[in-house]
Picture 1 (cartoon, rainbow, N blue to C red):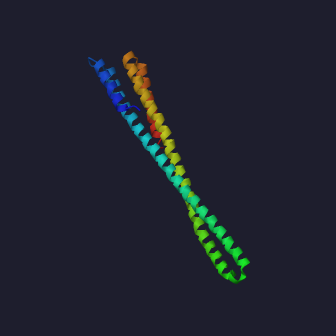
Picture 2 (cartoon, rainbow, N blue to C red):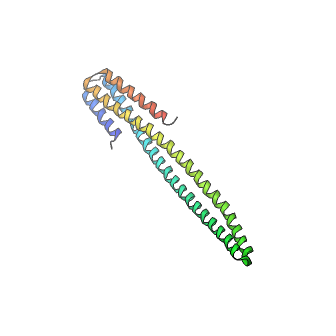
Picture 3 (cartoon, one colour):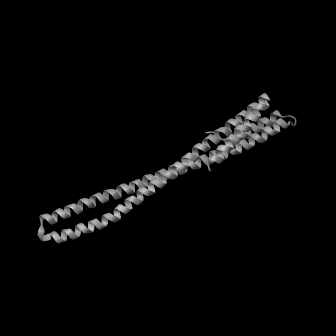
Length: 186
């Protein structure tokens, strides 16, 4: 992993060293590199935050799915119990009323369990959708950080070669990075 602010500082130091005299081109490059470094750091930090949020929401969704799975298992177990009590009532007419009452209680419990399972499944869906939104932002921010870093490198090359078109290209890539950064949150 790299440290964009440190790299920008090194580039700026190099720029200052190269400019024994005041040079407007070098001054503009120094400001551009510093600005790009700040933007690269911001995009990189936001990218990390979005990655963490996406993973967190995915983990929460997994726990919610586990809760739904457990509830459905309980629902099925109660369904089997209800059927067994119904069969027991058929096989033992003397205790049929007792078994019918227990079977009815199982049916009442099943409605609550079913509602709990469906709620957990809905929560899981919402959490997965939120995770996908964070992941999409992460991708936009990765692109932005990459453009900022390429722009910094291009600005450094423009210092060495004294090619203005490279400086302009660096600025254009920086603007592209800003657009991707803004798009991540639109």
